[in-house]
Image 1 (cartoon, rainbow, N blue to C red):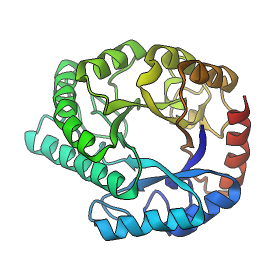
Image 2 (cartoon, helix red, strand yellow):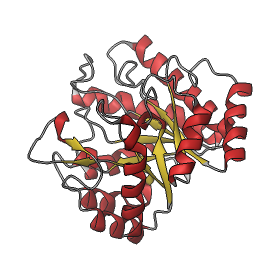
Image 3 (cartoon, helix red, strand yellow):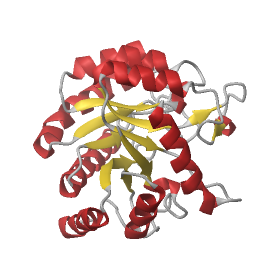
Image 4 (tube, rainbow, N blue to C red):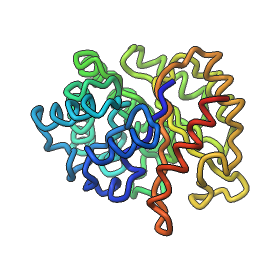
Length: 280
């Protein structure tokens, strides 16, 4: 499994203004084998980026000697695949299509996609659960051929969106789409508030295409519960054992965000934690 880190972990990464070459070199120097790039509406890598720009980033990654673990799209909160507005749903699908094109240009094999929003503190969107299911399912079926064309999977992430709340439901959703190019982006920390990541991994099995590493303190129970890796309630020994049982061999990407008090130390401390997790 590749030890990887999100571009969002770097200062100014969430804003999309951190120099990507610098981020890749810093990740490589810290011991990471790959970096997950993030495409926003604006920034260095964005929906406006063209083939030349993305290929230049990919060439720099090869020169540095670091892999590109995937492309993350955070725009699913703003442009929801389950919106009650058909025009908004079309915009959301266009965002995913551009993400898949960026992935192809970058030479990577997957795009993180938020499957929709029933309710969430991050978004004003609100969709009835049954409507969200059907709208998201229809979108995935429509996007699957584009994903296949670009040889980059749509990786549906389990997020705090009030939707796809159990591993059984996520499994049914992916199986109903029925495409090898639509799978799961499993976020370890996101399920701790209501369940156990090892259960999700066993149930989802080979449907898992990519993995995010986060940690969470269950007793906190809200956004303040997210903590540094190995400081929360995730049983990473069990998580790694079950990932190996399922045959997972993809990237392990630390999705962490720089704290205001010591942003410069985050990359090094995260690298040490990911190295320890990968050794379990």
